[in-house]
Image (tube, rainbow, N blue to C red):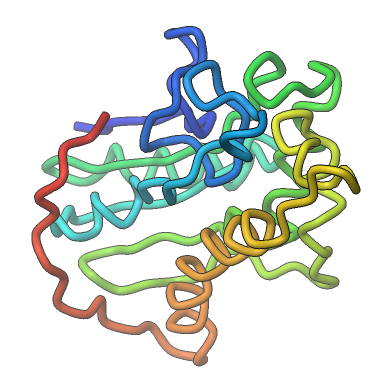
Length: 199
């Protein structure tokens, strides 16, 4: 059984409340930017890591900008006897406050900044499935999204929020990427069971 998550980084069908799926610093309806706050303050939950911690036989991240990789991973997951998980980045024009025509380009940039690394975990073994030839800087990608516009305005600059955002996913993914980049498949380390509920 394959579960596919179209990961838009939030629950966009609920009027954008600040939930655990939103990135830190993002503008939401329940964490609007103003004098009291500079956006959502908590780090987002990494759903892919949660599925890996449950020791599924196959877990992967994909992007719609690379349909061949997406189809290959879906086929691989469907061939497994048992539960599998595929997390696909899905930029949301309304929630990300970006032009709908830029959805695929935003997904491509998420991958090329390493915000959204493409990898798979098969029976606990990490394998990086794409390595950018030239890693793009994260800040220009963030600036294309209106949900982070407040982080880059001079008057309301929140360097701690911007740096936390840059390190949030960048801090989570590189451990996964480093394991895959060592030139061999790396075993997933023992992980604590996740006790916090998914929002």
